[in-house]
Length: 216
Image (tube, rainbow, N blue to C red):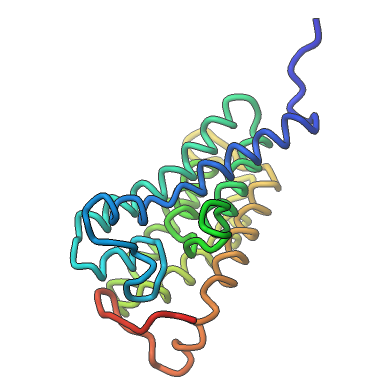
C-alpha cells in the first residue's frame, strides 16, 4: 500500500486550492451586508477589509472582519500542515491570493494585511507575533493603518531570516519555503498598497478612522 506523498502534484494543487477557496471568502462584504449596511465596496476606499469596515462606524464589525480575515489564512495553513509543512506554506500562499483576487468578486478583493498576519502566525508564529507588534507600534505612533501594515509585512522576511536556525521554545525554523512565503506575502501587500504608498509620499494618507474618497 503506497503512503501519502505530499510532494505529488495532486497534493500540492489541493493545498493551494484549499488556501485559495478559504482566502477568497469576503468576510467584510458578508458581514456588512448581513448588518444592513449595504455593499462595503461602495463605502470609503471600496476595500472589503477591516480598515474600510471601520469607516462604517461599526467597530465590532471591523474587529470581526479582522479576526475572520486573519483566521481564514491561519485555518488554511493549519489544515494543510496536518499533512506536510510544504503543503502548509502553499495553502498560506493560496489564502493570500484568494483574499486579494477572489473569483467571486471578479478577482477584486482586499489588500491582504489581516490574512497575511494570520498566515504568518500559523506558519511561523514567532515571526507572526513580532509582525503584529510592529503593526501595533507603528499604528499607535503614526495612526496610519497602511504605514503600519507596510512596515509589518516588510519586516516579515527579515525576521524570518533572522530567526532561521535559532531555537525558539525548543523549535527551530529551518524551512526556506517559510521565508519565501514571507517575501511573497510582502510583495503582494506592497502591490495592493500602491495607492497608499503614493499618498504616503505626498503626505495625504488619512489616519485610522478617517474617511477618504473611493479609489479608482
